[in-house]
Image 1 (tube, rainbow, N blue to C red):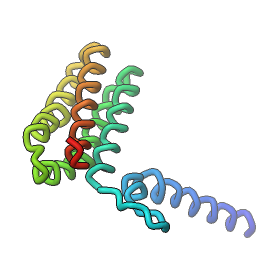
Image 2 (spheres, helix red, strand yellow):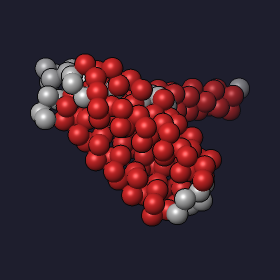
Image 3 (cartoon, one colour):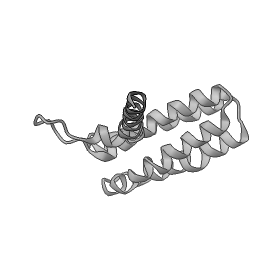
Length: 143
């Protein structure tokens, strides 16, 4: 009985840690802390998450895990940058939005499928990261 209870508690804690913390980190990052700090723009959180995922793409690609790299690239675009496009366009960043859409949705995924040399992929990821940084500036109205 005691072992079943401990196992049940361990499973509940495991689910909480996985689903509550890791699987939805963009939501956790976007929540305002209890003190009176400035609200964090969800578009910026999505953009930062996309940047982090692109770094993971580079790591997985270098290890030869092409399917993992492609999955992360897809997540960076569909689960993150896709939510940035409308706010970015609304703030006058339609050109960079289109560039990033092509760089992330089309070009990066094609490069992974074609298994281009790692240095070529890394160069593309770095260029994409620079554009994402520009997008953050536009979203912050600092450009």
